[in-house]
Length: 374
Image (cartoon, rainbow, N blue to C red):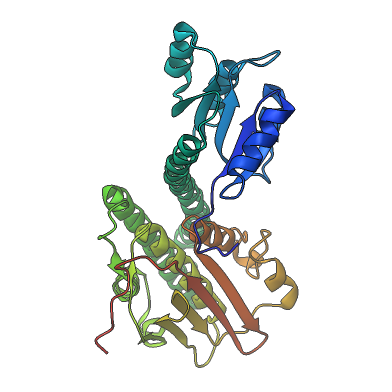
């Protein structure tokens, strides 16, 4: 399935009667993906399968062993994002009220099933499932942003500590040579660079927290160009580094979902590019904003490229070309996860000794496109 399409919620129908299961699948299966289970325990096993994304559970109430009410209560505890629908042929008000009150049932459908009612209920449940899924993805993205911040901050902070200890030892040594004094100055500059990088990441995160209320506003968000310019203003760039960075705004667009998490993604990619170009005689980084099949931000550098064996695993495993400088390889996995959280994607191309291109693909959203004045 295309990452940019909204997936149809998969339905799990639970009923101990085989004919009832077949009838349900035959009746509604044309418009939905439907899985079935004959009892509550089997239903839980299917929900626990990470390869199956169940968005809606429809269960009969009267079943041997655990009834539908017990199943829905467990689902409410363990899978709260799943939309729950109860099917019953019994008018036991106390049982139904207990089930509704204890497991937040979305709808109750009576047997025999009215197909128009069932399809309409499933349509509404599908909309709610998509909303819950989107909310769940955003929460996961925020959790991973915290983990990413810890990962990104730990390495430069450890560097600052080590340099600080070295400076203290050399300053205490009054017989330090001119060369050692020069090393102290370089260490101080490295400490300053690392500290400024940490501060820029923390500043971006604070903005994301302060702007959290606007994340669901479909008319909010910065344009891609504004976000890149803001990054370049706050990132601790030297004059040489800033001169090596170029912008090509072909067609601008608004970044509406998780804009400050995207700012961290851009910061991470820029950090990787600067590190790769550290000793390059003529470094160049180009940010390109354009719209082809989908809105895109491309970040290209003329660095040494990424070895094919690492490139193949870069978005899957914790691999890195910078292990000797403290890199753990988790940053690109974070970037991929953030992009996937709102149906975007990330693509990395690289040729050894020539270049590396990173493309961030964004889903097209109404009112997102903003024509460039250039």
